[in-house]
Image 1: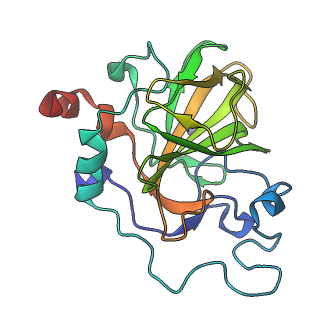
Image 2 (image 1 turned 120 degrees about the vertical axis):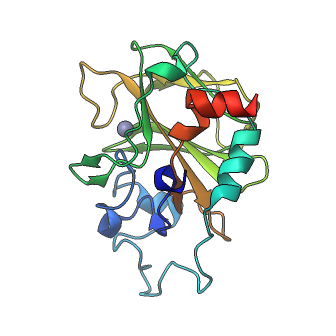
Length: 216
Ligand SMILES: [Zn+2]
């Protein structure tokens, strides 16, 4: 299982200089200032590193077990787990994919995989319309990208329950127009709980049939 699990690499999900390392549709440069990040990537405008001196949070099988125990919902209802393809390690134009793509017709509802809070609604060049949701314990961030539109009334700070509607499948950002899909990622937050920073975790094993059988 470790082979399918995340490589422990501390990443900034809106960091231009880390573009080759982050998930496919990472947020754009232009809006990073809204999040307090800087144009220089992982270095603040004052030249101080954004990273804390603390080491990145370790990601291990404990995280996998913790996430699996939550029985996360597939965020696109109707997508069969057996239809999923593990594309976490796929090399994309800008680096490793580090997410799970779920193909579905445009306009298919996208729902919260877990209880939590909407931390950030962000529009980026690659991710298009995106949602960053923290879990209730603020340990993990769930990232939903390429949305066609948000669910009506969705707002930052909103508390959501597993299954609540977040938006609709689309092709915003760099998704091919003929291939609507949800780009879904999970990353473990660091001590400062920054929505743009974390260690990616492969969602695929959480829904792999063998794993589902083992849990339920
Ligand atoms: Zn993707």
